Image (cartoon, one colour):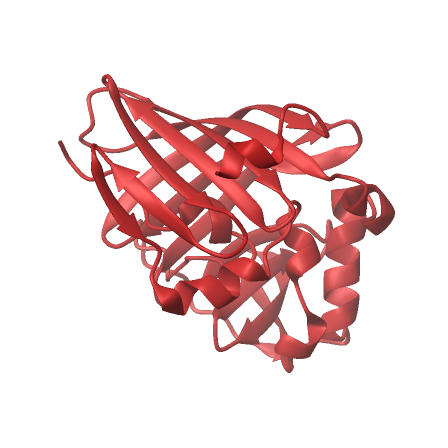
Length: 230
């Protein structure tokens, strides 16, 4: 079967996004100018747009159910991801096969069709910084350069670091796109659950693999225990 897991996709899509330049079409040339906003202001606006920092911090666990569409794969992939603190477990199922990625806060593994491998040591430090709501992991100190760029006629405040570039809609404050060496993520829409916004549809690409992820259901502060990560 075609390999369909994008490594560490569930854990790091937003906290340390996978992204690269979009390859679906040649990007229009953009001229970056220095933003009037600081990195802290961009991140604060993002947290406010998602529902407010206090509301986000009150979320202790999440269960997110997704469907993934992969070009060339005859069936849709279902994915259920559970998170608590910096722990996560994601199970993907397709055509009777199950794939698992798990991190217990200290170590983790990914298991595809019976082949189990430990998460590489160079990924562990980043995963330890992750949070239930990934947006809360953004640290303004990591972004010394804030610019304004136009994409398709819209303005975006762009945070740049050694991990990549993160485009936030200047009008809504929401994350629209991330681009870095490992892949790409483009948020096409958001959904609101109990006053908090979550990505509803994402086009992602990594390791030469494209996938469209749609969120079916989000459950907060229920259905997750420590036992899920053992």
